Length: 129
Image 1 (cartoon, rainbow, N blue to C red):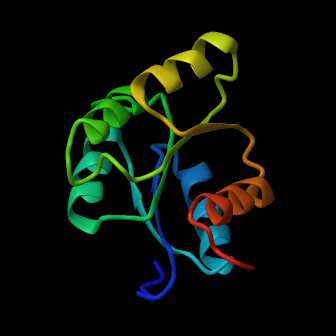
Image 2 (image 1 turned 60 degrees about the horizontal axis):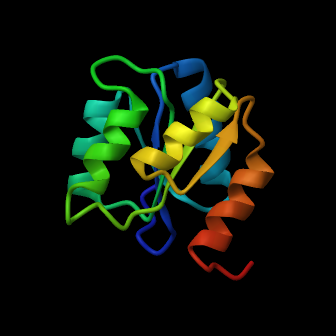
């Protein structure tokens, strides 16, 4: 994990190691400081303690899923304003609607398009390339 405090901090919440590692490495190469959580409960705790600038959240995970984790983050004053984008293989109208209902700011479908994710993070955080 990169620890450059001047770069934007991205928390990636994903239970599948085969997805978590390459995406987090690509984000680091793009200049982000990345931390990961392996389930929704850990993601909520890391968001509270680490205060990332942006959260990338899977949906289907053990302990608590991405919907509930997003709901919990939105209900906490210390994390309610952090942009949360869902990254999921479940790309249908019902899933996208549920993402909006729980307070997610946006949605990416898997497989991940790292260029689109990077552009969205930069736009959301108003980072000039």
